[in-house]
Image (spheres, rainbow, N blue to C red):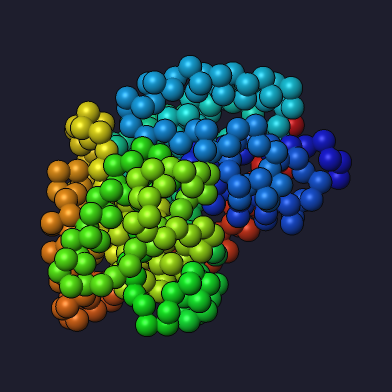
Length: 379
């Protein structure tokens, strides 16, 4: 085999970088000679992907925020198009990030480069219009959830499902005592894990609500500390602006933080699913700018926003969204979870059942093999 073949990989958010990192590591194991380049974050970088831009430069939230960044987005698109023409990759693997990636898929189609789309856009939430576009532009669709496979097949797309890739990495590194020692806590100290999102705009809106909630809990005699799980690609200064000395911050210990907490406050997104895989109780929060929320609410077609509830197809964890995302309401829910053992156990039982809906570990290797099949069959 020669080393002339390459694969373009594009992930524009931290969650996509996690999954892209797992996939690129498997590609490297199977074909050490193949070139990998594109957009991603620290995990993809560590796994051998040559990054043209980092996810920290690309994670925009909301319609207005995206409009403000359009000149930069166009710059990224133009540079990426130039690199594609220069390098002529044998395959493009596009990971979620639909606004950007579906436009890119159209360009790749015109250039004759086959496209694998890995991790579906949320077509079940935003209507099915994108399914027709995917049918037209994507050569191979690989989804993370079984219900997505059924939805695509009902609409004439032969999507494949190998299980959820997060099952391969969502596990703590340390036992409770060792973790508490690492963060400087005493063995009997208790805390709530705070996960305010992976974008600056999310942290700005959600972290203050989380901290106000913890302050209100302490006024109710619940002496729980707060620890913020920092997202990769987000600078410490962003958290310091909104939290200062009100919380402890940790990096690279997300799953330990979730596992050993009394419960977790989690911004809606992939982190809700990670918490569910660990079988830990959680409360889902979300808040954005009023205009972004109104536009989004008019487009969303499902009753829940938390991914854990979407996958369960019922409400198994509480959600506090936009106007309801208020400390007083959240405190009442936390107090109930901490004081009502049957209520807590009911949530834990539902979370245990949810894990079975995610398939078996090993998805990344299967997707890597599928990708390399496409590379070998490319001209």
